Amino acid sequence: MAEAVELRVGERAVRLSNPGKVYYPGPGYTKGDVAEYYLAVADAALRGLRDRPTTLQRFPDGVGGEFFYQKRAPKNTPDWLPTARIAFPSGRFADEICPTEPAAVLWAVNLGCLTFHPWPVRRADPDHPDELRLDLDPQPGTDFADAVRAAYELREVLAEYGLRGWPKTSGGRGLHVYVPIEPRWTFAEVRGCAIALGRALERRMPERVTTAWWKEERGSKIFVDYNQMARDRTIASAYSLRARPEATVSTPLGWAELADAHPRDFTLRTVPARLAELGDPFAELDGHAFGLEPVLELAERQHREEGLGELPYPPDHPKAPGEPRRVQPSRARRD
Image 1 (cartoon, rainbow, N blue to C red):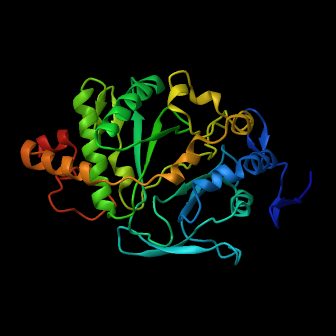
Image 2 (image 1 turned 60 degrees about the vertical axis):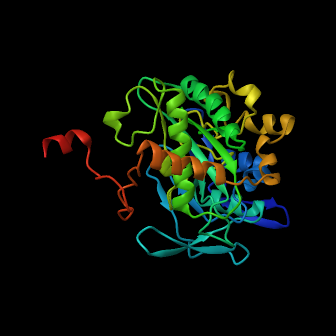
Image 3 (image 1 turned 30 degrees about the horizontal axis):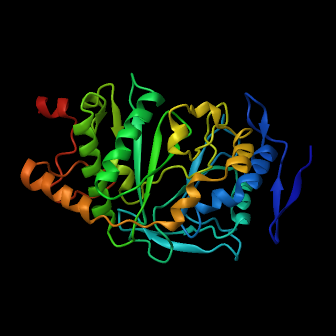
């Protein structure tokens, strides 16, 4: 087994150690297979990472071993890979890598990175998101098909407010819908828009969709995880591998093909050929940037006319004005 090989990525040479190390024991995919996958999709993968502060989800011993999230740029980060300083909810700061070329993707793969988690901001303006990301998360008793039904209804909701979304599989049972936006609003404002759109979708599909933060209140529905738009919350980028036995990929899809899709169709082995044949549906995102004024007005109406207030933040966030108690409803009733 070779101890290391050198990969040519554009004008750079990237070292890949232990290419024969097994990362996915079921199908037997190795670190070298992972590198070949990312070489094949590097340009498309970079589209979702370019200039974005990016957390690396690293699996140095493959999907069967321990993993960790690398938020701060490693000490051995090459000088050609820029970083950006981002602020956590705690007020602390970190310098995160911001890929600008395909070689950065393969450099991270050599560190055992399988999944990339970029922020919804660019390094030039790390406090104003340029993507509204809507996460449709199936709860127990629901599946991918339920998420697809919710996504099609969400598409109509977005259109009502002058927005357009692009869907992708999460690589698991869920779906992500991305809306490119003008970088004019804060994380709190964009998160508020995610809540407003989630509530609008919930109103249209009350038996199938929920925005309830507490699991005990969600039932067998699709949860619109609005807190994925909170600061320091990220989701797997387009074309990221996931730590699942089949080596599934978070894959952009066209709306027309969504109804017949299934996450297991999109893997390390199948996605490169799909991308080469059909192209990248997310390539269109670069040409759009929508305004959020209609959704901000919707949120204001929900607050003013319907009495719908703030929803809980993740537990590591400071308490927000108007936020309800961070206590499970069943426990609160016992207190």
